[in-house]
Length: 366
Image (cartoon, rainbow, N blue to C red; front, side, top):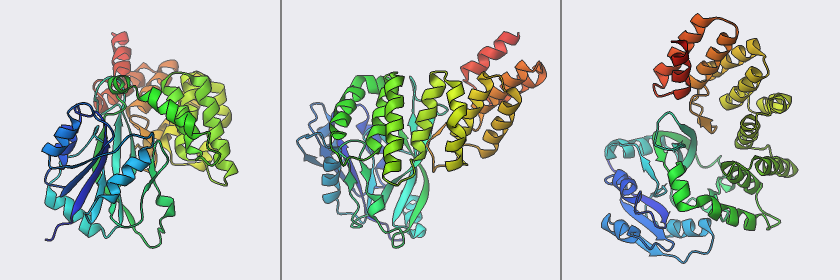
């Protein structure tokens, strides 16, 4: 069969730690590597060239979209694959990769992005969501926003261009605690975001991203303010606020133990996104802490029925499996049903054997 010609497009700065793994995973899959380097002082440029990449030096001007668009402008492939240096693809055979692209009859393909969080790479400590990362060249797609840049999919006529999901994962290590601290991502992002919101025509997404940064800093009051501001600005623009914002809003309230506040408003968010498991999970946690045990058990049953494979949403691992089972166990403990309590803890540990909270509970039984 004829293969597609695929260009990998990426931007890089001081990524010698991760870049080899990223480029190694696409060897044999892509035909061209375009790297826009924004001022590396380590071995990143040399690594890129050693893998056969075309490295383009670009003076950093605080604009991620501009750098990414330079990579797109230099791509000569039929298809473009977007990766960051701290990402890598699942292992896949070239023929299978290209066969799927051909048989999809699609113009834009989304892949499952697996974001790891915490202190180390752990398959059960992730947030997952589909992202459009593979698309035909010359569709007029480009990146916008100087930070947390996104592809201008809203400008593409979806009646003309067909989108489909490609069942392969991109693993992202960039938000592991050690990586964010080493790169000082939070400081960089905050400066760029505060500059961006000075523009009167800025996207409501910028307030959401500011809220996320404040959340990572554990400045929950500021995070909540910007979260609500983002929701308000989406509504003023006549747009439904994206599910991500409600996820963050109720995550903030859970983290600050504002359980009554969760229960006051979360049903309205669920009406907007009735199949979003994380929202039901936050509701269940609030119900548990407010002593509404039977309601909590029923809500967690719904979490388990939904599961956590809906890639339309950013989903935390466990909300439709081991975390839901753990909270059910706690509910049955309160009800005095120790048989169900132990059974559910063991079931959670079957799914996630390193689940410390469940292990600690079981140790307390002995």
